[in-house]
Image: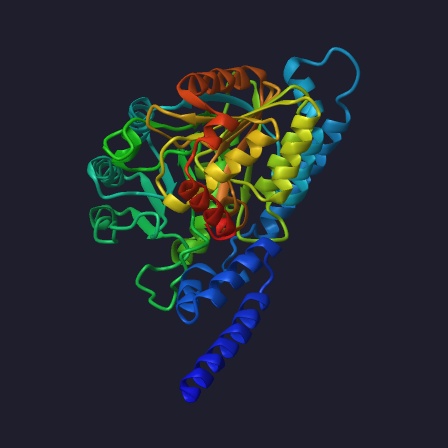
Length: 490
């Protein structure tokens, strides 16, 4: 017995030392540090297997960044735009110019942190349901003449996936340059064999950054969560929809699917195209595209003339703990609010900085409202969302649980003037682990549309009150608190 006890104690000591070394050898926030220590120490050996999949950081050489030549070009544009922002003074400003002036700190922050210029003259259409979205998406694919660039976290090999693939094959056969990036974990079940008809037709398709058959790369984190489409360099999509039958409400588990997607015609597409080309060149360098070459510049960044008035920035973030561009963008938006903040998110797991920003806003008299789903797609994430919903309600924030299916939109509207829509949820994973992309839009007309969409969601939701949470069982409360402990890992 003494021998077994000594062996057991030795394993515990060695496991604890190894856990401390493993967790502290790479920089991460303190919440994630303690969460991983909890897993590694309380689940000896098995915890390290879990860590190998979920905990390891992404090497810096796999972070996709602007080339020096492209950065110099964008820096010059940004320098000129900063001068224009400084000139927005006095009376006579249009409504959108007044919004730009109000948001000038947010705009300049993105210029500095993400090299994101302000892109003007955009016509924007909104989509919340799968049927109209895919109808327009397919119409734009059919009309493509030169290039189709698609990047989705999920590209399933189901009915809508095969319909999309068939259309891409048809366009590739017609001479259109077709490129597809998909996330291999987000698209589980979809293999390179699925894309073989597209490859045979002259198109390209590849999983983001690495090959799924590289058995040495077991990371589940650092997913390509983008949902970006660019067609002929003129039309672009960004938001929450992926390629899959569930996004059309065809999965009984979820029922009706409500999301948030926008179609852009205007210079905002340049930002989406730049994001896609960065990701493509990092994913498949053998077919890299150099936008500095005149022929490539004309093809992928053509002149666009529209009557649109919306101005926007396309902002990306990834697993770089020093930047967290979209999270800081959310915090800055919240700090700008004078009257209202309306958030829709499927996963509500904010870190302390976002919680503090929301707390300050509501204590300053700002009407803060949040819509979340009333059903899980990931059990631990759902219970953690319930935990934070309770905490936010206690702070005076209005939280609603959507009842008519699953709501997957990721939107923020401030004062009916500034809108963020894209792939980033209000959770640790989007802030620190995933590659995300959002459009931050400064336009009164579009903000009014998103406020109306938000009101529709609230009308189909149940208010989450202190009475609702008080009626929940002790077992449910335990699951919520336990899931909250794991929230930095979810």
